[in-house]
Length: 353
Ligand code: GLY
Figure 1 (cartoon, rainbow, N blue to C red):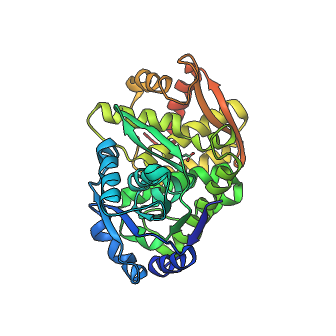
Figure 2 (cartoon, protein in one colour):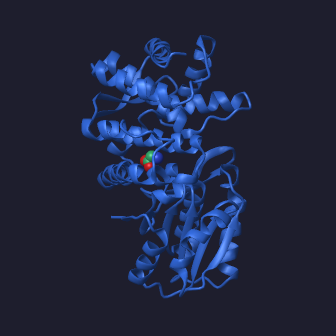
């Protein structure tokens, strides 16, 4: 199982992890143009004895592509990496996905550590072993399951993130809590995502990452139960696609927070999900998150995006992950368009749109 390290001092944690791993080859760090300046200095003290080689790629998901991957491979090759080298991925999901894939494929695989520097990266991309790149206009089209050996999670990185980034990460925190239990959900609903101190965020963050790790351990290659992690995502991907079609962007986890409300309404309609929980979570999302930007005239387009979601096995079937209650998940639920339309209406009412 992936080793998780929760800390308020990522440099000290890294130093300890490196001492334990005792890599025999040269150490490389992959950062993006932001994390190279903002986050590398935070972990530098943990690298004192090893003089790492730094590889920097341009930031942003648009650069999670074949060119960046080739640049990482070339840097590893050109700067003397061997099969015994270690790659430390320092960044958000773009860096851990790209670096994880580069590490898994360079000389058929070298060791790797993830140090997520965004909340979204910590609760989602850095844990669970999904690595890869975008290709031919399709997100995460090429990749492998290859878990980083160790993930160092520190809420210290997140206190300087803009509110939208914190809200985005927290969308996945809400998702994990709903999948896990009423207790995890109650704890998650006590934190102000964009205003919490690192010390307030840390326990909820740790619980969230551990929930994901447990789900992944039960189904590492997404043959079944790991699909629980798709909660909120059918609608979320449609909201992201709608925004993109208008030249706008909605942060992934913000779309997930909105998507979760759609899935809870569907769960209420189809699985008798408790009304009280639906109202508590909707109130939290309404109070902390920006309102979703669509109206009734967008339903057809949204449903068409949902039809083309890659989770569907046929374009006639729109697939959702639903809940009987927090902690009781049902994967692969096929929902008809009339019910989805009703859920979009009710979701907008609940969020006061
Ligand atoms: N992002 C969901 C998963 O790792 O399966």
